[in-house]
Image (cartoon, rainbow, N blue to C red; front, side):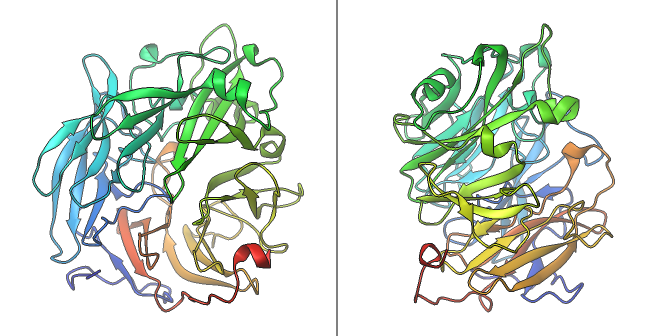
Length: 433
């Protein structure tokens, strides 16, 4: 990767690695999430979402921009506009197998039907998909997504914005809603796994008493790095006579969670982390690089948040480190030795002045470094508008991209981690754990 010298270096608080702001001339930009790099497969381009405003959540039909940054030339441009976004994930921008495949969501504002585009940002050609995108397979052949219009039932920020009266309501285990897979070569989509099937077939089972008494929805969905397994997130809360939306604001304690893993055919689901664990409080599960294990934050001992790992079949749930407090959005580097994460501004590891650490932890010794300290506190009081850094590795596992609030606006940064990464192959994390 070449970083053009027009991108300003970030030097505050003496970062331990080289850091550049890659959106210096375009305000209000974010990258997607900690499990998806905005850097293109070749390493030349960066795709970000530009919010149309930063002082409030969006209303249905308001559009934002899909922007392409050329890291080699320093130039950037708008390549598309979309109404299919929310403030935390933008339009769920995902690269496919090459720099000619960029996927993102949109909404038809007449029918209020969401869909994804397959865009060649270099040639300007695009193809409409029947389904939506939450996560793309590494080769770009498949898109996986829950119902993007119902994500705000439990939490705002991650799906698409449509009028509340157009949202589907699932009371009990739905047989016609769940997780959808799209073949990007044809654009055709189908229901891969219904909520009813996931609950009835999962082994181990998802522990849920009287499921007919709950509203149950899909949320996160993720391919593993090998593209042969899926993580699917279910959320539910007690159904009442009147439909409710954004339960995180109404009563977050009423929401229950489960992660289920499946094959690409949606068959043989296994509950990896069920509600009996989630009720201890936890967040931000994702795949290990090996595609067999999952990491997350979990208050496993009911004392303080810890970094934990679990096999994809739900066995061997355990702490990664005994005495290190978990936070933010953790990922494991494929060297098997290092964990990267960030921190929310309200977590104890934050500095109390709006700045947070990007944390770099040696899994053999437990030694921790703050490699970057940067501000993420912004001016809007609505929690859905918060700025999470979401540090995400590129496909070479050398560079990370993250969000921050600098100079009065949202900006995207890239850091070169080369000098910190140990390529020691003497043992793996699983041998050391």
